[in-house]
Length: 465
Picture (cartoon, one colour):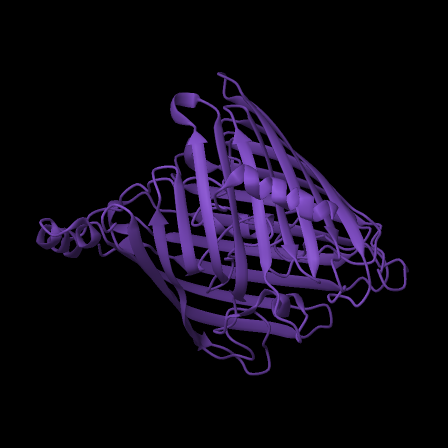
């Protein structure tokens, strides 16, 4: 009853949705989705943009085809004239040596084709997105990369088909299959194809102009999910691991942001499955000298609901995290700490990437009882004359991990990540993004098993309309 009351309050306070289309992800997917921040002003948390009004994207460089098409459409009604069509090719290679010395390997080529109409009568629009991942190299005995459909099959799927209803400049409804991004329900877009959802939602925002405080909020109901390596939409409960029930997820929350502060909360309720409450706040203190400081904190509370279908028994667990950033002239030092309760389960993350501050390339460090500390250094090489070249290195140490079923200790784990990326600032290469990621995960004690993972990613982005 307490969880239902929290959900009702959040939904009534919000009247809007979860910031569909806004660039928000769990920590590991966030790192793989955009250039790493090198100043505290650029650093985001999972809640920051969850309810935000989609920001108008800067136009991509003009090309002859786009100019010709726009010229031909200029006198047509806005629903056609203002339509957009974006092409996002991607190629991705992943090689991982697993703990048991088996290997996962694939090289895929594909990407996305995204369309959205202009508004009819200034209120109604439609959109769609198709995704593909075709294998260039996929050894039959090395599945498990999530780049392809198991075991090593191509993916071709219409992942988004939606309607958008703009009530006014502050309230928008989104209907049917679309990409969403919130702390625990999100695209998890760190492979070839993102997760998308069948949902019926609304989002709202008030204020935010000329530095004024901004209130954002949202609510809705999610019925189905298409995961990264699948072409099928399945009930949210099935994706959670409950195969014999069809349950959706009711979501609601709100956020308040000022120039230096932000605070937001969101609640996810699935009948007979799980309730997740997430709270996050951030304080940013930039300085005219270029020195900046930021402190963020997060709290997650998870517990079973109703008939306890997820694990067949009641459970409750929590997570708390702190993150500090210190930046100066293109360099940033990050320290983070997370603490997971010793409960009847690991932290749940079946509907998206995990938002914990110590979630990195291979491990989320979200196991029962696990505590983790992370140190990360990030640098923008523009100060050395290398425009749009950034890199970071990080190390995470996790300890106190306990098997939730037996309550026995599990060997501690560590992980090292190295990331290098380049977005050329050259007119002919605008929209190109190259990325190299390496992870080494190893046990501190016990069998001292290791995991090594290499990712090579090339993204491109251009507009046809």
